[in-house]
Length: 215
Image (cartoon, rainbow, N blue to C red; front, side, top):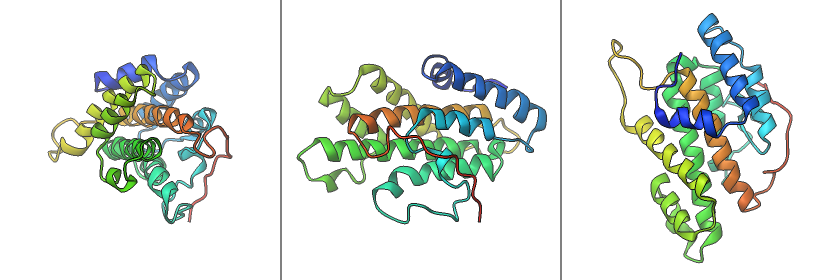
């Protein structure tokens, strides 16, 4: 199985830590390609845990167990829970596009929070800001390293495809595969964490236990 999009290949080669690359490659080769839908994801979440901060690893994979009933944390991290549900409870081979979409929604929420934190303009104005517009505004602040901004622009292209290029013909190849989905998730985690740490968001430097609870 190969990555389907150049942006995701660049993320895999240049952004993900070597240990994460190895864990993803092993998961794709030994679990997805060998076992198809009967795969085990334990090593993915160990790698996610190694990044620190709040990630899908420390959120119950079952969305019925919602640790974020409301407020800012729900907007930021509920998409990561849905991404994990699509990987752990559903079949990532079938729900790959959803994983990419939810990962992008996490980044959208992170960027909106940064805008609300770093501007004196009324925070409500950013509630509906798209990822692309939010990243452009953040870039103009000249507060974030250019490599992170470039990474966000690459992710925007992937995110927009997940929203708009929906293949409803089962005879055609899917827009995203399992490899794409997992790389997109980890890319979103790294990009999002960079911004959350920049604004000193609570828990962004902490490491939590892996949560495998299900209803």
